[in-house]
Length: 465
Image (cartoon, rainbow, N blue to C red; front, top):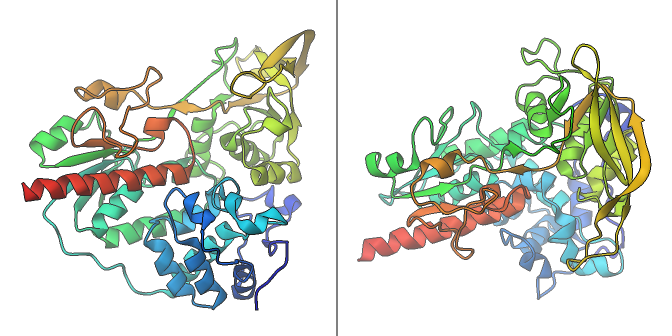
């Protein structure tokens, strides 16, 4: 019998006053009963609007139907045809603006909890399935993937399933890219990421860590000297942006990239960690995106009083609403319509306060977005001893500077054919944050799928000539 409730099944989670003191996963996941009940809310629309708004085109009604029947492994097999990282996407994908945003049930209530169901199915499979992924027959072609983030892993997985010999080159000592260095354990446990990577290895994907493309070896050397017929660049956007205000070079000022890498990858939150990190007592996080929320919530768990400083209003926050709500529940303070002017220095060269200015919003411009405008005479100080700048990132220029004929945007993004992901160099493809700048995991995965399909078409056509 269909479930016509207008409200999603509640997601069990740690209570705010408990979770803001630990790094364990906040959301605890559905059990079998809740998953089946939630799946029965799906109307199984013929038009499938949810699928059209999924960057990797998962057959959502089909997998949800299988969940409603209790066929959890069948549901997983449907998802895995389109997604190489279902347990990851079920946790960090912005479903509210994509698949769930198009759900018909959302017209008169809450949409079907597609993301929660995807997470449930992937977790169920990981717990109950003992079979390894079957490695397909080799097709004789060799492809290199640069970067082991969501774009690179997706491209690698799709090509491996087609029989390609795929090697992923990762600059860090651990595979996973932004999934391991950028997203906190309490949102995405690293064991989940490792399980997805292990599945790709079972398909035959080789992963080489500690390889910096452009330093250790160049793209041209991969193709000319090592026999790689095509290359996909999924190296992300790891170069942090700053405000260029006085005091940004003080001790206790971090980019969110560095702060989160120390916390997530190097486990600086654990006692006895070899990675140093300043445990500020009063921390300001500048920015309003998902990265800012992650940094703020990590700092809170280290014991700080945390203030998010954002120059627009709450309505303009680019972070997922769920992440903002979680941050507020955990006791994080927000100062809206506020912009930093300078960071004060103490006698020892550490941060000792921040001068800010109040802002107002202009009328919306041609793009429809209001600009923040400074209000004269409204300067004031915030008492802080640590600042985390979460202002976005851009691609590192190393690959561009060491690859002949690779066209890029002025800000560093690699220029590609939107339909294929191919760059200005034939047989070299790119996708994800290396092309768009910092964006979502699922959009990067979509770019990886697009490139894999185009690489296969190109190399297959080469066989027939």
